[in-house]
Length: 132
Image 1: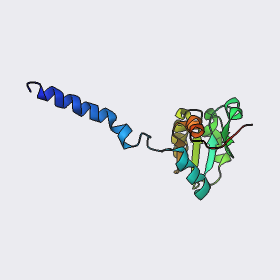
Image 2 (image 1 turned 45 degrees about the vertical axis):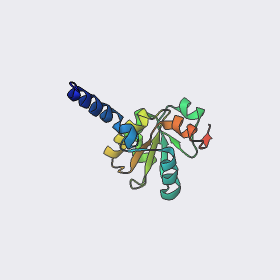
Image 3 (image 1 turned 180 degrees about the horizontal axis):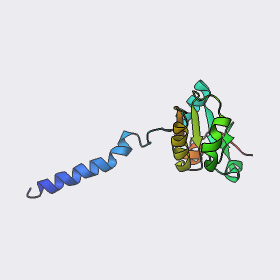
Image 4 (image 1 turned 135 degrees about the vertical axis):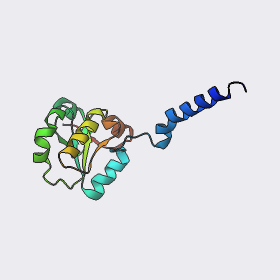
């Protein structure tokens, strides 16, 4: 009981470290694969694969369009004409897609989001994959 202060600090810090896992695990602006499917089916979301063409050829979300990450700023507005449509970004593991979704929001695509975990999470969910 002499170290009650240290024990309470340790428990508090442990709880704070576990909070993101308990609260849902996905970052703001990111979708689970199941939520992405709902957006695609219900709101006609446009899926943009922001990986390189060789990654796109290895497997992508059915019906998605390939726009390499380096070209998102220059070509997204030409690829998706209606900025009010939901735009879902996806890449192999989700990191580039998250950055691409942030860039899309700056370009005026308010409903831009990324699939958390990318194509890896999509495949693990058992969802269909198309190869070029």
